[in-house]
Length: 220
Image (cartoon, rainbow, N blue to C red; front, side, top):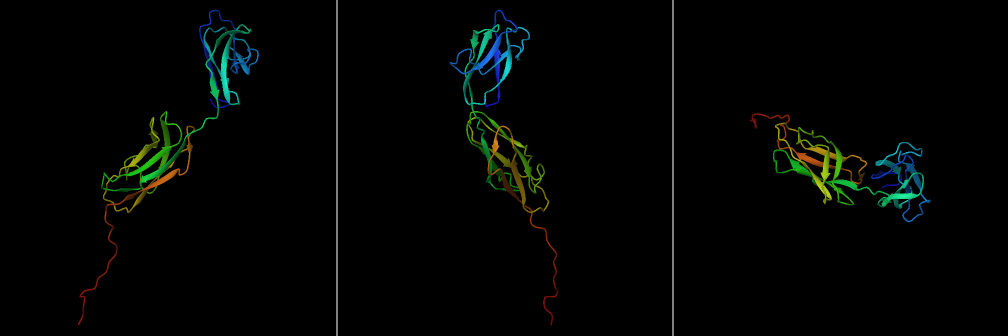
């Protein structure tokens, strides 16, 4: 839990609940009279209704360390239950970056795709969805198959590809670019590089330009 984050106290099984049953946030091993914060089961510091079960949010302490929640009876120090310990500490977000691992794709050759690789640092214990925007001179969904705007790096994986598959046409366009830029999100930090480019090579020959000729080629 991050300092200042939310910890939820959930309790059940109070046989004879009262409105003044209360919950304390404390350091493990501290005396029951030495607590950091407290609430009645009404989730306020004023008594409400009795509750045999329920839940209340607590603000996590600003100091890193281990803490626990204690449930007490009727404005006293008769301890009814003690929670599991939880840890307060700075949450380190993964850093995501992007690179063009195959920086060219050829129109008219489906097997010649361009590939962006999105990578993350840190734990791979859970999936991570990374959002991005698409720009460049090529048109998403017209010059290449639509890119959705997000990619999932799976459990146990440190990277995931974004593949650029071209759509063939008969228009002479010349080379065009696809630029993918990672978007900021509360679940990760965008590192450097945060943007990369794939170039789509046109398969149409260049259009003929103006010409002039002389005839005959020699004059007596």
